[in-house]
Amino acid sequence: MKLSDFDFELPEELIALRPAVPRDSARLLVVRGREGQLEDRSVRDLPELLNPGDILVANDTRVLRAALLGRRPARGEGGDVEIEVNLNSRLSPFEWSAFARPGKRLKEGDTIVFANGLMAIVIAKSAAEVRLGFNRAGDELDKAIDAAGNMPIPPYIASKRPADEQDSSDYQTLFARETGSVAAPTAGLHFTPDLLARLDASGIARTAVTLHVNAGTFLPVKVDDIADHKMHAEHAELSAEAARAITASRASGGRCIPVGTTALRTLESAAAAADPFGPYSAATSIFMTPGYKFRVADGLMTNFHLPKSTLFMLVSAMMGLDVMKRAYAHAVRERYRFFSYGDACLLLPNG
Image 1 (cartoon, rainbow, N blue to C red):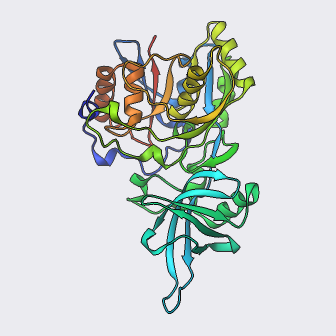
Image 2 (cartoon, one colour):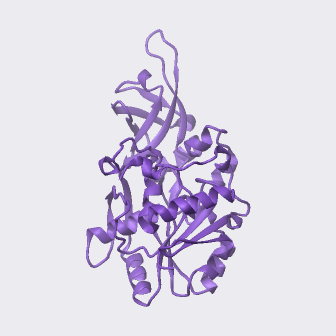
């Protein structure tokens, strides 16, 4: 299939710069069946849209304040150089790959000094990224990064306004437990304690997986034939306990509904890796396009995605390209809010 097949018109003013308040007041477009029946609802309606015995699977990754501002101390007669660092992927307890600007002012062996005594050495450098070794490790490094950095809001929001303290809570889900992401699993942003309580009371089960989202989630597809696209890799984990809960729910007639594409990618990666379905801990670069056969996910709750993105390809794989283009055209007409802080879809391919 061609990249142009996944293009659609999106008015810029529909890109949400702040989330709905409260979170579960966001709108929810329900897309049902292979014919794509559309229904305009609210995230608050989720307990009545799901069935007792269904299981929701959220991503429990926690977003680090991974946008750092530092300085490279002067070399010789030159002055200090201000360096913007955006962390990308954790490589070891004390190392991260990162994007640095201006990268041309860095070389291997340079030190970058951040706030509160946090420092890093440039271990390696490529055209795209630098490999940084920090002076702290593990939980201590995570705490130092959170103290020194800002929330790494998506580029399509950062181009409109700077990150602020409100983003520290807005861009974190209430499922967040495992630190390691530099972008939020945004479908989870819609949940509130009240919504979770009503889901529990409705007999809808919940479990969690972990996928640490990196900046690759924002990379554009640059090839005309999508079969030639190389997907970025992210670390994903599914526990034995979560796998058993999902298997038991499906065996009893319940549906497995991932909360977000990151949770779905984790489940489908695990299902592809082993039969029977069980625990998983590995990097995944799974790429789902129309024609993909889903093994575990019976539906999906997700936000509205960018034109020509791998995520729009994923939802088209689940529901069909024609259905999703019609659903997105409806969302544009009805002024749904798009992307990370926007509204949501509930995709139910079997009705």
